Image (cartoon, rainbow, N blue to C red; front, top):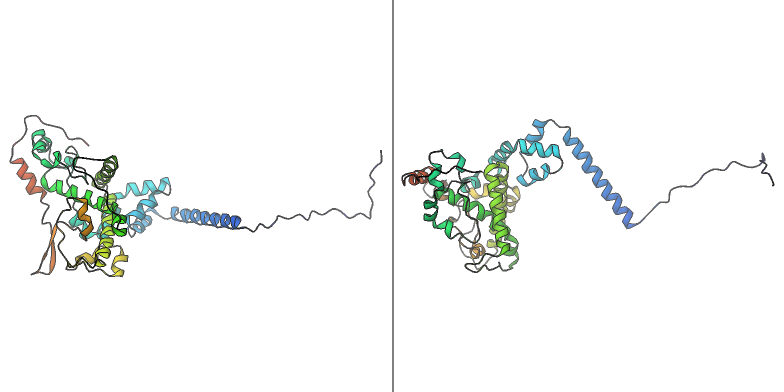
Length: 322
């Protein structure tokens, strides 16, 4: 068998292979996606290094939706937002939605009512007397008497919050002219049950978490801006409109609603009324002599609760339930 004999004249082998340079739309797209993921990871790492106090202070300048999205980034941010939801929600409302908060006041929770008064509020005889519980609106869910105070003011406050969410749901239809679905009297299709049930769950969450309450106000501000823009272009609507500039619409606050404008106290009893609804801002009226809006005209919890208590107490007490 022949043997290989090395020669001094032979040059050592040199590995000159190199990675092929790939140039394609697919690889370029993958590089961009990876770079984007790297930037997000670096941003998260940078934020995570900030002191908690500075993070909380920074979050108060964001919209509620941005804060909630921030909380979904990782567990630490979720815990941070959950632990400071009260501070964040109240601060954001104070900066962005002070007027809407006076229009859409929160109903009292049953647990906030003194123990001696609760049994009368949940008494079955009284619930039967309240026709709103036996013939509810199709576009909102009645409040749970074991969770929310059911004096007339609190029922109205609950309804207003639910309507704000329902009105927001149909903005696309209203903007595009797509007809709203018709719900026949006495019928309650599954899609409608799902929608009003979802809205009720959000309102329940908002009554226990100021950040979610701020989120509802943010949603209604967005609906109002869309409606004001839409009605301003409606040549058939010759009523007085809400004044709003493009800068005010983009600001993300309700400051423009402090200007003189049309009254918007009438509750939309049906979805058909959404077509002409421009700015539903209950619980206020314009006092011409003082040239300002007066708030707190419709919601009087203490007065209405006192009226309920004058009706007497039921024979069997009922405990509250969360």
